[in-house]
Length: 269
Length: 227
Figure 1: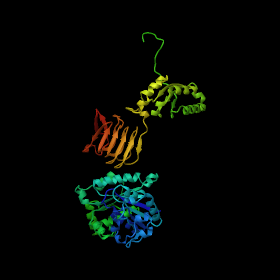
Figure 2: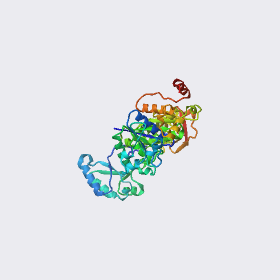
Figure 3: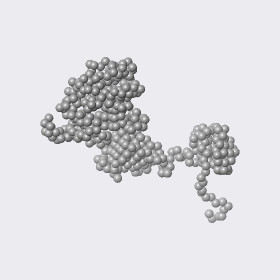
Figure 4: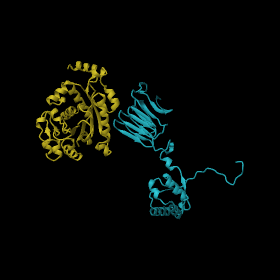
């Protein structure tokens, strides 16, 4: 049975799509057959970050409406084996999504994939609710600043009350926190919330901390998931995060300026 | 007490069966009564009973209390009074039928300070109340095993106990009970209210942060204090 993981946040621009691309790529690198779905109908971006925008013929909404078969819409990644992208439609809006249609597509994907990663749109409206409704696990992407933390808190409340698992009284959705765009130097200066501040408010399992990095922008611009940039701090942080998600224990890195210096000296990078 | 008298007045407490009317239709009531009497004829024989109108509310306006009284008597019981009557019309018609208007019903719907024994059990929330969530408890206390985050709201008619930080809004004694309190392991609220008094906390008091504290109403003033 495939595990459905939603990447969500409430707030926009925090790194959901970057994380979806890196996380799905990392799972596939670890040997799991993984598909990543863009739920941001009307504002599709995942195909750009995954570098497959020129290969989109049919999309998620076409499949829901029965205008195309799932296999026609799925784009197989050329770099990593076992990774596929289901792109969003750019010409439609979120109302094109409906629970029954989404369920059918997820059920069909579950037959041939180990992990289904859902890249949620920003907001808490129908698009975001469709992305999280069927999830088994959620990765809440948060920036270390107050409005992002509050929106994540709101999203966690919705995950606990409006998902399929909540409505059927099943075990609740697994909740993980991913802090992105973290700058230890700015935390030291008091310009940014620290990991502890954020955990104090949200109080859920910390899956990883991704440092603010030029590598993320470079990766998006070139259509390469940042996790494939193994030399970059962000790429390594995503590798750690995927390993932790799969049950491995790894110490958190990039949390303090001192530690970063020490690691740099140790690894000579 | 100086003169000896033929009558001595004392208070007495009696437990009487209450007939709770669920219909205002006399035929239905007759059938229902006869059914009950068949189940336990000895229990109902000549038993004084009180008729309760709470479930009928406005519908009791059309009820013929003279006929109702006869109907209950026919079933072998002795109706002594009617409770939960709404409005003067109902009350005068009950009195005209020779039945006592018993108090208790109307005042109970808006108690000033409900007895502890009559309060519903406390509601327990296992986990945090997150931004955008609203928890309301009618009648009883609220216990939160977690934090109440910014943008979250908890309301209870009784006390509120928070085993975590209070960062959002909390209102205890929502039906006007000024004796209700709010307890939390750290008081950093946005808004607190007890009864009808509320306080907007623009700048949280650093001295209350990280310590168990209580919010109570003293002389019409809301007090946030460490425990």
